[in-house]
Length: 172
Image 1: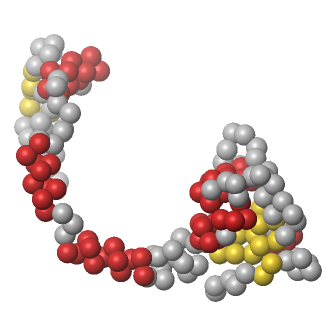
Image 2: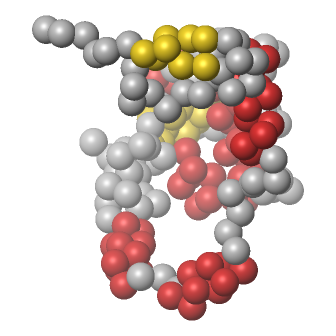
């Protein structure tokens, strides 16, 4: 197999010669200073912003029919919608500040549906806080967090079946 031909090119910044294939679009020798200087020349004042006319044309189009239908379908889908059967849903075992135990699937749905358990805090704060506890337990945070406002996570084996347990249906 033959290799591509190599030609000698001259850097547009420093004038030094360098080797490259004829189809190569590089115009600098590759030194950091030359590459940086070239980018300053070619990218000055460019922010890849849309023009006002382009924004207006896009706004006039609105949502495409496919997007409108797809969004509605996704919200109703047991795999993609806000259900226990969502493909991203995980099993969670929680202990409340009052030592009530909850076994559930889809923490976001649980927090949204049972926001009264987390009052005066919002369900979003509860969800974020419990996710932070999970991340800490898995060693993914710098700071150790073992609970959120008295809510703790446990493992299924530690969860057990005690008399005070609140049984929530688990989807298979």
